[in-house]
Image 1 (cartoon, rainbow, N blue to C red):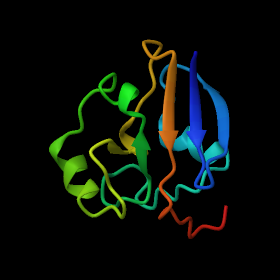
Image 2 (image 1 turned 60 degrees about the vertical axis):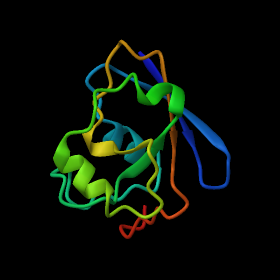
Image 3 (image 1 turned 90 degrees about the vertical axis):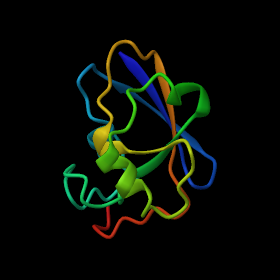
Length: 110
């Protein structure tokens, strides 16, 4: 199991347990995080943009070029930005800390 720690826009934290094979976008949406994921994981948008804790960033497989291209369009992107739809959790990670960008908007009203 991986313990995912979401840091909300207001600084509050929320911890969620994840199983190997869970996709970060699905986990976040099920936990009520404001990540829209408009393209449903097809890397055609950046509405699931998150910022990974610097200590955890290197533990993830690197982003592919298509993901990097979408991150170029994300508001508030940093060197630790990723698309949540492209992060599949494994039992290698004990914890993963994820910041929800202040620019995140969920147009689906969740």
